[in-house]
Amino acid sequence: MLYDEQRMAQTKERLEDLRKEKKLSFEQLSKQLAERGTIISHTNLKNYEINDPMHSLYGRTRSMSIEYLVAFADFYDVSVEYLLGFSDSRKREYHDISEQLGLCDGAIDELIRCKENSGSEDAPKIYAEQDTAVLDDFLTSTEFEYAMEKIKQSLFAYYMYDLSKGSVTELSREKNAEKIEKARQTMNKYGYFPVENDVVSAVLMENAIGAISAYLRQLPKRMYEKNITRREDKK
Figure 1 (spheres, one colour):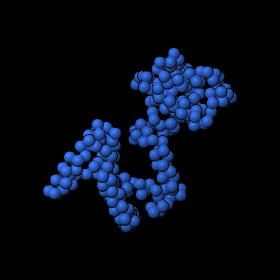
Figure 2 (cartoon, one colour):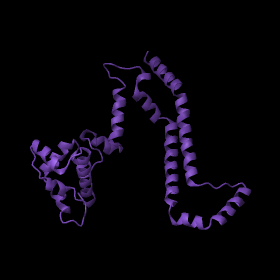
Figure 3 (cartoon, rainbow, N blue to C red):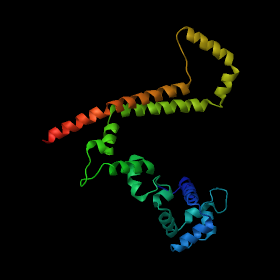
Figure 4 (cartoon, rainbow, N blue to C red):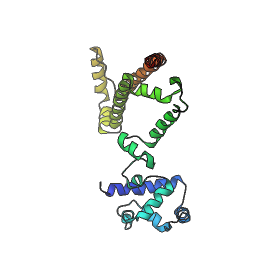
C-alpha cells in the first residue's frame, strides 16, 4: 500500500481532529509533547495540518519523521496505521479486528462489553444473564438476516428519494404537476397506486421492525428450550 495524496490528507485531518478533541492550541500541544520528550515547534504542528494542496507547505506531512509520528500516536493513544490512513480503527489493539470485520471502534467496544457481561470461566452466568448468548442467537437467526436485507433496501430507497430532491427530476415534476396528477388518477382507476421512494423506504423499515419484533417475542421460549436441551445433552 502506498502513502498517497488521499492518505496524506487523512493524516492531516486526523491530526487536526485529535488535537481539537483535546481542545489544544498548537502552542499547548507543543508544550505537552515537549513534556513527554518530543520537541516539535507549534509552527511545524500547524504545518502538518495544512490541507490545501496549493499551499507551499502542503507536503510537510509527507516528510514527517518517524519519531514525530510515533510521538503523535502515543500522545493521542491511537495506532500509527490510523494516523497514516491505513486503518479506520484508532485503538492499536482493535486494528486486526477492524480490518477483518470492518467494524468501528464503538462496535468493537460494545462486543467487548457484551463479553464482559457474560461472565468468565471463574464466575460463569446462567444463559439468561449472558449478553453473548443473546447476541449469538440474534446474529445467527433468519430474522436478523431478513431484517438486515430490509434495512439495506430501505436505506437505498431513501437514498434514491433524497437524490431526486433539488434536482432536475424535482423541477420537472413541479413543471408537469398537472399532467402527473392526471396520470396518477388514471393509474388509480385501474388499480395501480404509484408511491414515492420515501414511502417505500418507510414500508421496508417497518418490515425490518416487524421481523425483529417477531424474533424478540419468541426469544425467551426458544432460548429456554435451547438451554434445557444443552443441559440434558451434557447428562
